[in-house]
Length: 87
Image (cartoon, rainbow, N blue to C red; front, side, top):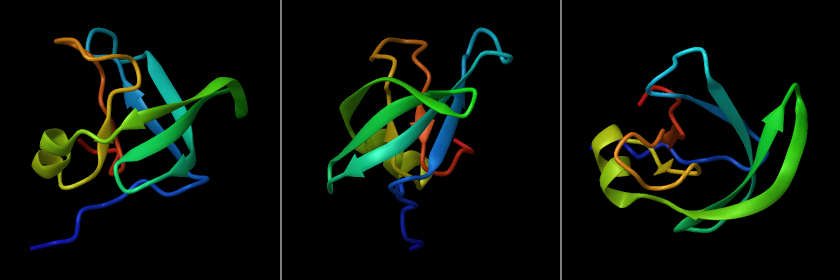
């Protein structure tokens, strides 16, 4: 079995809106533990807003083969940020 791809500190990750493919959110990983990541939103290449800690979603992560979080909240059409940027 292949190893699950993990979030890397200092790396930027992006996700798209389900409703509008032109709407893209970018986050940088500030810190991480085995079960959480600390993210800060990036806009135009600069960090913006406060840092926030998010729990890694185990079911999504197992399905995608990469760690996943939901920084916009947990609801039916919530975008998912993946360490693979493919899921």
